[in-house]
Length: 136
Image (cartoon, rainbow, N blue to C red; front, side):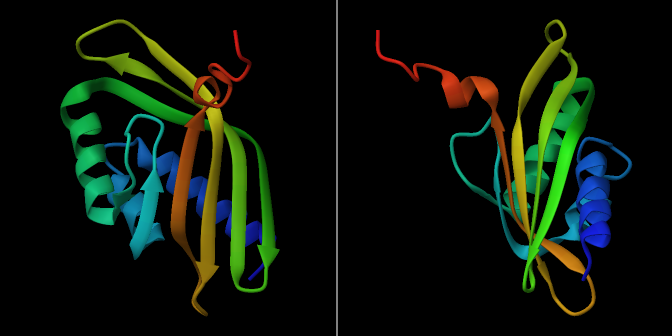
């Protein structure tokens, strides 16, 4: 239950999230009751909703896409782990030009005695955090 294991597991799951061949490895990191708040959906997804969302993105919406993280930070509070990082989601949609979004993410995990498992993933673009932050 150490910070290195938490950080490595979270980073591996996030890297696999946008890899067509490894998305199931990403999903395997998350508990069945996990929740997902993503930068491109207006509602909270459960694990099956997230699976369908990623199948759409990786199957038909993108020629290629990748999630890059930097400045990762992992902290442990009892059996709860928190992994945070800045991210860039970039890629080539099939129907338009290049797309790039910068943001912040948080991944809440729980150690179940066997290893770390994801409970909630929240990706938020910087635009959504600062858009119309000041009146006028």
